[in-house]
Image (cartoon, rainbow, N blue to C red; front, side, top):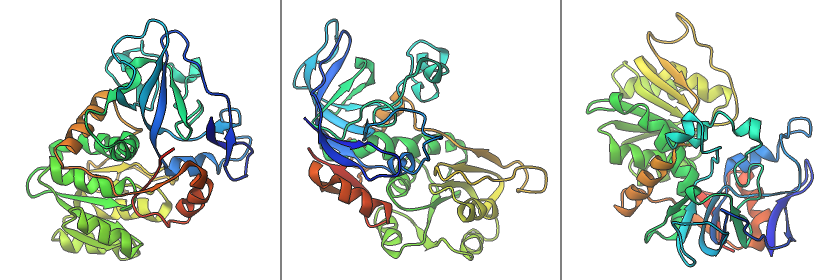
Length: 344
């Protein structure tokens, strides 16, 4: 079968032929119908050899949807031909966090060497994907696979980030979305669908600001040295109750710090890793700062429900498997608006 693999540190991904996997006991083999492309993939391919936590080659893709092709022995709950999405952050299934459906925060995954598809385990940018347990499958139930694939991360991650702040996102509140790309444009929609907040989107690219306004942002502004002042002006000097940073570089975390209101939330979702100093006098009083990771399986089901209601739709461009290396290059340079989805 064809697969898109990252084979060598510092090299571009390539399309190769690899053996079709066979499902063992408890496993499910999917024929992939859609696989989303994510900046986390770019992050993985940017790590130096001494930072890479898994062996190469690696089949990429952690946003996967497919039809059930084969069942390993003992599998119950799905049947051949079912259309399902893959819940990506695999855990042990046994620890206290996993018992709550929070496999994204599994306490034993690192110890046991359990890694998500495309982020250590063979991923979805291939003709077939082997899923290690049926509990990691969520029925698509009528959603377009091309829409469902990016929702497994680009939808789930902002949904989880927003959900923690729902008590603050009441009528009259303000939420700022920094970065209106793949995750950010979905965050705007989630905020509009689930809260009474006024939504302000910030970005450096005019096309992404236009997309943010198209999907529901009340206000947009350039994410530059004047961004925090713009937020303060739009909020009568008070600042935003919730600031969601989907970039995570030094300038954007500083915008977040300068934009947030007293008792507000700053949630840094972007993986660039810029630090944000926290201490008395460094931020407005009683501001909380969090850096969440992905979301729970139950939250993915909720995200799909929003999509079925028409409240959430990813802006996508689709490409074939053979085009993937070129698309990664375009993605890396910010030339994809919304989300790229590979259709094998």
